[in-house]
Amino acid sequence: MKRVLSSTMQIFKQIKSDPMMFAACFTPFVMGALIKFGIPFLERITDCSLQEYYPIFDLLLSIMAPVLLCFAFAMITLEEIDDKVSRYFSITPLGKSGYLFTRLGVPSIISAVIAFIVLLLF
Image (cartoon, rainbow, N blue to C red; front, top):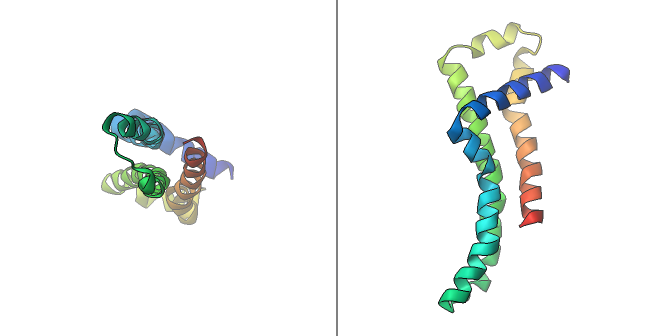
């Protein structure tokens, strides 16, 4: 577990160093704020009711966290493949299965938690 956590922290350091991927991780919170505050404001100034579309906005918000976070992890993985670093992960203590878990499983778990938090907040 310590190795998986170390590998995940390494990915987050790489995400933090890239402004585009860093912004992608916080975009679901920005979208949630825009949907929560922007849609009612838009309804007030235009006298148009979007009440029947609120479930669609909720669905959009629920899929944005997993899509954007997994996108950031996928870009890091592709960068490692391009740099031919991924070949050497099989001989590390993490191993090939640990490498795949930190690149595929961890973002899925984290994005599900973040999607739940975003839906609760907004």
